[in-house]
Length: 343
Image (cartoon, rainbow, N blue to C red; front, side):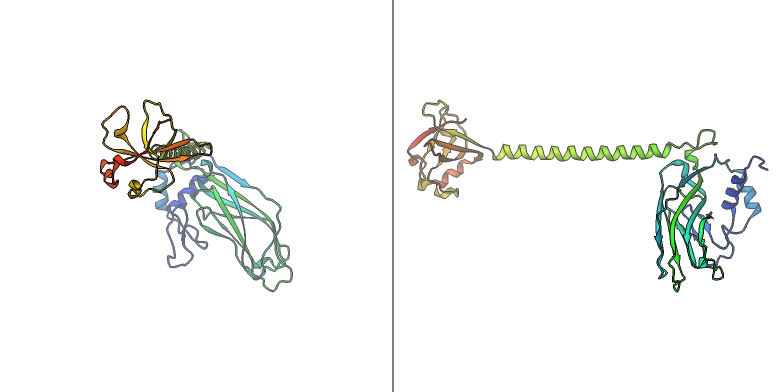
């Protein structure tokens, strides 16, 4: 025996120990918590033996919680062609609403034929509960003025998220359109075992909020890291570009000891290099450096003349092998020679 059980605990035990009856009935569904439900049979047939066994291992529920998405006056006409009008409300993410018990919906609807108004509610888990079915003999013209409907079809589901109400007017011949003035959602719930206090009597309302905060922090960190990686990639790319394709300009200085000899003519000898033929074009040979370094290779340079008459040498960092000398008819005949120094 469990004399400590509350009425909520008893409901919880009966829901989880019930068995499907009339299994061929087409209204059976499985809700978001994995429980079978039927709008005609509820959770099924009561099994006293199974309920007693279940109760022996049952942990007392913590205090009940509730959240109200309040009524707001926003009149909307319900389509007269029988198509549903839908409206949504949201329950914030919080561990207090992580395990639904009961859901209440209050509606304000004006209608000339109340029995032709049907109402359903869809939970964040996707379970659809039928609140008001068609009743052909209910010909009241007073509609639903603050009527409260309750469903247990969402038992055990997560309560936070987007809830959607759908209202249909099946009285297609009605001359006066039905209007939804507003509705209110009340979610009665508890918290799952992982979000209960150490003594199990209360829910810790900050747990899921902390999870959400941690997720947002992770998202922000990932975004910042992505920006850093992209920025670093751009910097590296620019650095490599400058390193490999930078051109250094220098002016002619006749008496520079580090001068590089430059051939200052288009010369037919450079025609085979494949480089653009400009009025002033030259090939610089590194073995002509005044320090007589024995370097195997040569640098190319384009020479231009600005409006003041100063000759400038445009050096590239591209190093070509000495085999490129074979492209010249006679390297020694590439004269006259001028001296050009690095900046």
